[in-house]
Amino acid sequence: MLPQVALGGNAEAPSKTIPEKTVEEKIPSSILQSERDNILTLGVENDLFGRGTDNYYTSGIRASYLDVSSSIPEFAHDIDDIIPGFEINETTSLFYSIGQNIFSPKDITNIANQVGDRPWAGYLYGSLGMTSITDNHQDQIEVTLGVVGPYALGKQVQKFVHRHISNSPDPKGWDDQLNTEPALTVGWQRTFPQYLGAQIGPLYASASPYVGITAGNIYTFANTGFSVRMGPDTEKWQDLPDRVRPAMPGSGFYEIPAAGWSWYLFAGAEARLVGRNIFLDGNTFSDSASVDKNYLVGDANAGLAITLGQMRISYTANYRTREFKGQDKPEIFGAIGIGYRF
Image (cartoon, rainbow, N blue to C red; front, top):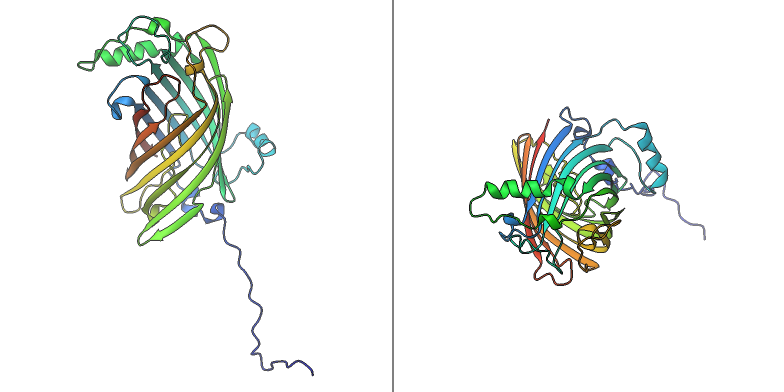
């Protein structure tokens, strides 16, 4: 028996599957072609913003300039051949940063060397980085040069701040800080933005896992984690605030909201397998104070970002597990970020 053939054009044509757009393809053109494509960000981290103490990781400050969708120098194109999946395209942006970190033992009023406690240390640095979205992932690459030791000015900055804050003790142990050492660190992070997403009425919630590796005489570690965020659906392309390293990755990118203001909530968790941390292991090329570090360190954080016109303000509460043997309690510190887009 012959198969029946439908006549008169009533046969249904085979359906064609339309491939889903990648994250790179979904980015609105308004983001890539904005007239205000420069963002300045100042981030300050301090344990006074958290538990209200002044020890261990006592202060971090980082000023960054993000040039959105900028012209990329010729030498940067070589990265295409080095990192699998990395591509310089319309989303590629450059960022430049300068910063300082200060570390101290638990008792900053003790002038004697405190064996078994975190060494005194200052770290002054400058960074050059690049971020790019390719298909469904975002790569962030950063090269950092700096100095550890007296030339990092940790002593001068901490003493100046304490001199001008009422009831603040005088830090007395800086004579035992880490020795002068040049610093070089190279870091790479790969994030999968909006890996999971859900529409909740006028809001949009998403989860973004990430992995990374950092190598150098200051830090050497591998890390993995995830971030979640929720805010108005119209503002789903905001990135997390730029933070002092090591931290949850974020470029500090945000849009100027059409309604004049906007907001979003965010949180995250990270695990780091630490091979080297100069602020615990001590100097690389000379004898110095040191402690036995923990090789596995975890971070958890949560925060709020509010955009008012061209300015964004953010606060992040951070919890960090014990970083060395004998540390009496985990660290709790806060981070405040102020960005301006122009």
